[in-house]
Amino acid sequence: YESPRENGVWQPPPESCSAFGRTAGSDSSSSTPLMLVARTNALDYGTRRTGIAVSDPLQLIAGGLATVETRELERYLTQYIAREDVSVIVVGKPLKMNGAPSETMRFVLPLVARLHRTYPSIEVVLYDERFTSAIAHRAMLDGGLRKMARRNRALVDKISATIILEDFMSSRRAEQHR
Image 1 (cartoon, rainbow, N blue to C red):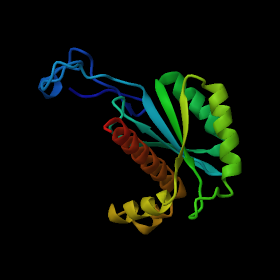
Image 2: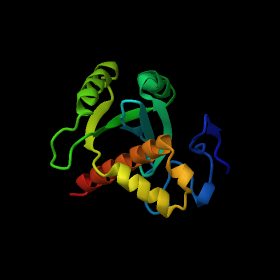
Image 3: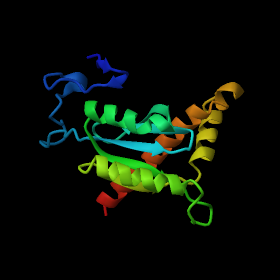
Image 4: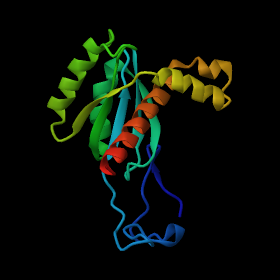
């Protein structure tokens, strides 16, 4: 089965697909059907650009979605949410090393308030984003990206958003298993 892509986003297989020996909606190890849930998005907010990451429908895998000009962010999210089922938007919480809010927080809090108003059915969460840029740079180095590619701030923002999302989803899974 080849997964169709719509606007570059993977689409789940149809119910009748028997890819990997099982059908969507069944699990060979139990009688519990696979449950597709809404996606989670993460934002690495910046005053010029914002990196956006998205989870798969099962909320197991995070991937970079886009980097948009911050002035276009809310329009982009509106269009995306109209196409995709989103249950959570995670916004990177800009903190200094001592835990105090950074200068960017004065821009993030009004964004969070607007997201709450615009999408009352979507959970909006602030999540610590400290070290994500450093981790993104390290991942780029470890991945063998050339120096010019590592200077691409838009790529760093998208990778940072992915790191925020991965960390958020890991912490949610840990909470569920307590």
